[in-house]
Length: 381
Image (cartoon, rainbow, N blue to C red; front, side, top):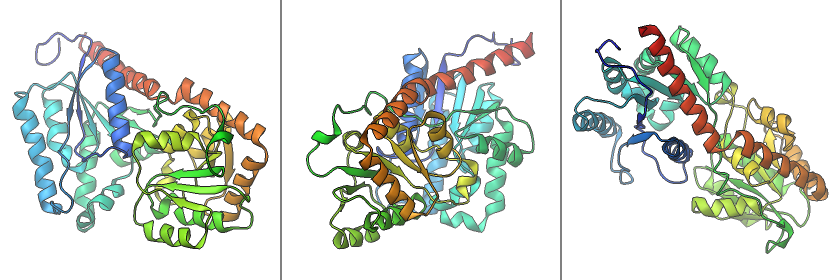
């Protein structure tokens, strides 16, 4: 029996709480959707709790915060204060009411931490005025959780330091839809020039300027294009580069399914992230695993998380962060030695199927729930 007098049995239900609006194409959308789908395939009943997508510019900071609280209030009213066996929360500074209520109602509470507290200030700039309060809100939730799921080992260390306690941390990284992202039989039959590809947000920390400088470099292989898909703050810089360099093609934002075909048709996928404050916790980007699942060799920055995967599976080349010449030379190697590049792509595909599929990640998540339930049963015997 638990403290409420209920018999403790194998958990079968999950309330998945994500208070961040999610759009198709975003990493959070792919992560949440695929983990939920994997759990459902394993027999779990999952309810998704999330706010509706706001109209662009419709909500300022205060109204966004109120909206997040209203989402939680409606959730608790709808379920009659009877949460699922497991309440799984993508960590959000405003999720404290749900975190504490779920614990009070004897649910297993799992927090998924995807980055340091400072990441909240990018989406909510006004919060920079109250960093101490935001840190306290996140710390309190993490300390109250039965477990914390993180995407990198570095974040596990960060969570322990932030909470000041040894709350059990589980590393469950990002993954790829290995059914959607698949190899093509012959890249050389693709129309137009061979190309290296970058898919993602056009942000400075993604290394967009490095990609552009690499394509304009003399070290870049002749007859090979650079294809970019995505949008963001660096869009103006990309547009200028397209006008100045005919080998650069910018597709803008494309449907997620179309990105799978784009990646699979490339000779190399570029993941040239810059060395930033966030990279010290390790990186687990979807684009890395999606390229691997596509059987495409990758070129990654020498940063924790990226180099570890590439070295472990010999699925690409590693360059120094911010080094455009090294990036161009790596693409030249891929174009010049297709047999070696294809072998690296095949290595990546095998690793994606064995370790980095979303199905595998959902299985790891399920194991967290079952281990927590078993530990709870042991305490109550």
